[in-house]
Structures are given as structure tokens and as C-alpha cells.
Image (cartoon, rainbow, N blue to C red):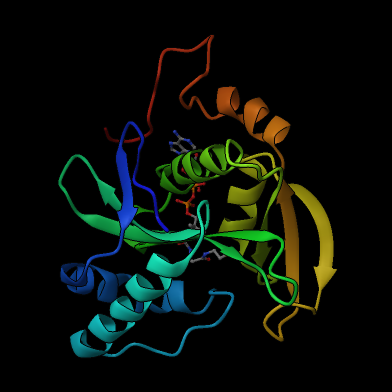
Length: 198
Ligand SMILES: CC(C)(COP(=O)(O)OP(=O)(O)OC[C@H]1O[C@@H](n2cnc3c(N)ncnc32)[C@H](O)[C@@H]1OP(=O)(O)O)[C@@H](O)C(=O)NCCC(=O)NCCS
């Protein structure tokens, strides 16, 4: 279940049905939809988005922390700018996958990085010692986010979601190392600087 988490610029909280208009703008955007793993059936309208959100909310209420599905809400204007999840990877459901989906007009501001630090940092306090990102080949921004957060290259696999995917792994020491590089909470030697806006 999505435990709420607050970062300097973001509130990560469970989805709500009135998030549907913002969620639709995110999940029907081709620059987001084309990269999702697992793939998502296209969502065309508000009714479809509301149904999907209801499904996510129900599934989330049944999931065991630290797994969950979060809406990413920006403090500065209250806008839901994206979603993120920590979900068990098939087939064994033992490994946790981290995934992010941001509206393209907020890419390049470090929000996925800030989200990763919050979600993985929280998971690492809950008996989890690694999380994985599975990225479609050619998804340069997602690979850069994985590397920016210190994720290590694991390899290429066909075992998830009937797709060929690039696998990255994040461990607590990787996160500690990149906290300072990314000027995120806990960075001792820097004044906080949270990107292009607050
Ligand atoms: C993958 C995705 C979430 C990455 O978003 P992003 O905004 O590029 O990711 P980050 O948070 O890592 O931001 C990094 C950028 O912000 C900049 N930035 C600004 N302030 C920053 C800060 N405080 N910390 C880190 N980066 C910061 C970085 O310099 C970098 O800029 P650049 O892209 O011009 O090099 C986004 O592209 C997306 O939603 N894609 C579609 C869905 C998808 O592919 N999901 C992943 C499936 S595995």
C-alpha cells in the first residue's frame, strides 16, 4: 500500500479518483505510453482513466508495504505530475521493480530522481535490500535516471512481461553515494538545490 512520503518538492501519495484528469494527460501521452514496462492498454478518455485508477486503488489497498502505486504531486502548484510504483516483478514476485511516469513537460527537473530516493530509501528501511528497474531498449531518459541514481547494470533479459528489457539494480550503498551527487536530502556537503524550480 502506498504509504505517503514527502520530499522537498513532492508529495508521493496513493492515487485518488479525482486525479483522473491529470493521470489521463500523463498516461495517454505517447512519449510516456510507448516506454511502459509492463505495457499498458491505451487509455483514451476520462471514463477509462477513472476505471483504471479505481483498479490501481483497489490493488494498492491489497499490496504489502513497501510495495505500492503513488501519484506524484508537486508542492508548488498542487499538480499531479506523474506516477511511480514499487511492485513485485513476475514470475517469482520476490524482486521489487521501481517505475516512474512523468508528464513530459516536467522532464529534466530531477523529479524522478527525487522520487527514486524517497521510494527506495523508504523500502530500504523495510527489509528490502535491492530494487530493480526494467527499461525498454532505447529509453535513454529512463536509463539515465537509473544511472543517475547509482543503479548498477545487471543485463538484458526476456523473462519479464514478454519483452526484451534492460535490467538495473539499486542497493542501499548506491543510494547513499548518489544522495550527495544529486544534492538530495542527507547530502552533508551541499546547500540544497532542488533543480529548476522549488
Ligand atoms: C524516465 C523519466 C521518469 C525520467 O524523467 P527525468 O525528468 O528525465 O528524470 P530525472 O528526475 O532523473 O531528471 C534528470 C534531469 O533533471 C535534471 N535535474 C535538475 N535538477 C535535478 C536534481 N535536483 N537532481 C537530479 N537531476 C536534476 C538533470 O540534470 C537531468 O537533466 P537532463 O535530462 O537534461 O540531463 C521520464 O522520462 C518519463 O516519465 N518517461 C516516460 C515513462 C518511462 O519511460 N518510464 C520509465 C520506464 S522504466
